Length: 214
Image (tube, rainbow, N blue to C red):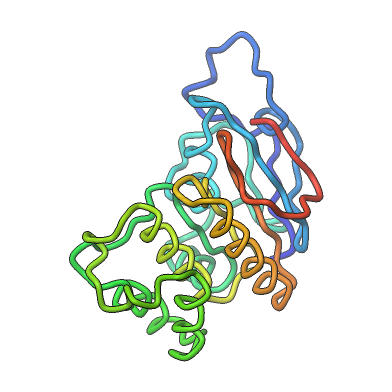
């Protein structure tokens, strides 16, 4: 996938508003592979909706979303499985971890499907992110910041053309945010992938090619 193309896209719940001031909604927007995008959003502007639209979890929007030239409304379940396995990695704001499983077990749930990273590589991510001692800890016992780092590592355990990160450093200090940014840039560079980051304030420091106001 080389491009995510939004054409006059708008959440259905916004349809009755008299005016929409946004760089994304009701616009013609292209997210290009290898681009690095920051989407700045205020609460209630549809940030989570955008994540769910692009990942195919929701269809309650007007307009068109294309992957390359394919309208994603036409995708069947099998196509979405392939997209989520090979083309788009998503780090959701709520992380969506299994709290009763250990940190490593959460990672392996994905990596056993993709076989994308070796165990040594996964452990090196834990070491770099300062949570090597939490490999065998149940996620429910970790702090939000530790959980965020586990969810980030999981997002890297698959091939992707685009990686979408919804408020990835909301629970991290600046040092861990910088470490995450470095790892993210390295992994995206290896795959020639695009990066899309959302933020309602604090955001990960990256060399953004474009900043958009949602």
